[in-house]
Length: 87
Image 1 (tube, rainbow, N blue to C red):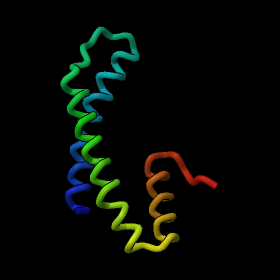
Image 2 (cartoon, rainbow, N blue to C red; image 1 turned 135 degrees about the horizontal axis):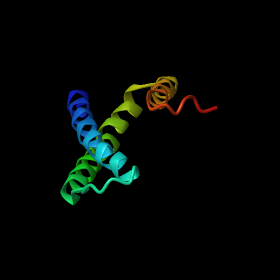
Image 3 (tube, rainbow, N blue to C red; image 1 turned 180 degrees about the horizontal axis):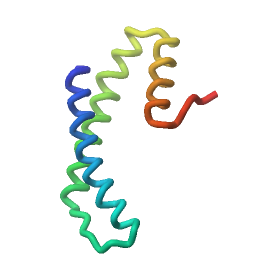
Image 4 (spheres, rainbow, N blue to C red; image 1 turned 120 degrees about the vertical axis):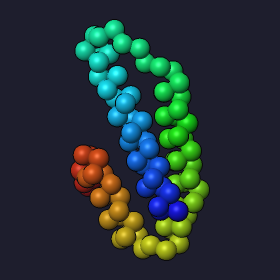
């Protein structure tokens, strides 16, 4: 499960990087196209990934990990995303 989710993360990161580049150009006022199929592919892949995390990973984590473990993982995820610790 985790290997598959990590692989999905890499796919999502690649799709997001491509979209982000186009969105950054649009934000600069450049006349570039944002292909709906690229957006739809990212949204579909992201939705499927989140569904797998919600229905498979999170229930497993709740069974196998302590509350302290889950808190540490959540904090690490926020820090990795640049959100920082939440008091």
